[in-house]
Image (cartoon, rainbow, N blue to C red; front, side, top):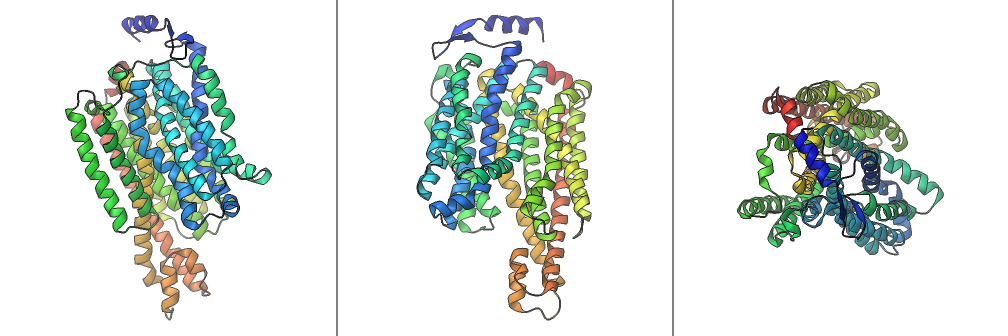
Length: 524
């Protein structure tokens, strides 16, 4: 850090009056900043747990509430649907109204709505509560990252803080089903929602004293209303359309939703260029760190989500593992991902940043290429491939998030964080939709040539719908053919994902350049 920046940091650390009337440092230093990070990690962990914990609670709550199949899908999806759709809007609001204020309001709302969800008496009530929880979650996510950017202005400390944040998010995704299973064994389904209430009470209680307020964009004015509407018209249809494709419902409605989203996105970008105070400052994309970071974040999300989706199906449908055993075999890759994320800042201090980014993507791509030779009985090879891929992407994911946040000025940290998180959410939806569709396409193309002679039309049609319908067919030969066809689809998905990451690695190396790390560190 230069002398000028140190002086600036010192001057801005003077005691100021907060919105809540509590006197607090504008930018805590040392131990207080790390305690603040621990406070910010709690809602991050909770939000990620909330995404996955409901998978375990769904059967129980469906029985108690009498939820239909369609209602179950809405209970599951409405949370992540609105979370992804509102991130950009909430990031812009955080920049203008203050990230700490947005965090505390969102935390209080999340706690109250969790109680409402836990004691819902009908599927409609639970769907509404989950929808509002998604809105509150979208408020929390960019505000959390923006506050981390303000708490840790130095590149080295910010890199560590971002790694901890990412590790908490990934840890929550891993722990969600486990936490849900433990709760379902001892309590009723509503306990899956109540687990977050004490966390939010703690956040609201200690947040005003431990968390600073970052500089505000546009003097605290509300964002352009038309931009907010266009951002929603972009993201909500896109997420909906991609989710429908991922479910195999690639019909007119899904296609129309994607077209509407893309059209609204083009209108949104045009409006941002004309506004003096845009909701999203497109000038951020002129910084190659920001652009490469977002692109890498999106592509790794696409590839890893799609391949992980296919991998879980392979473990269950081809190898015949139970859901519990699938979860256990997924633990190694999740633990490696966590370890790599936490090690990334230390590696970055010793090695070349660009080398770590593109080298990690090469390792991940090579790991996924191994899936190309997996057969119908290759548990060890499949686990090895996914562990390599997870280890490879973990370091670049942490480093590019640091590049994204370091490229944004403090008053635009909320917008930068919301764009990164939106890319992550869209990457997951796009990955499951595209690579899942590729898997289905290859499966259905390979199956007819693998079915034994004399297979009835009914059996062939059932097998064409997937391995689960094929298992209902009495002929073991038909089921074996379905497993081979699925494995061929899995092979293609792995190779496609691996090649995508290798191309991304070459592009990152070319765009960032060899001398970028020194410049990046000083610029951040």
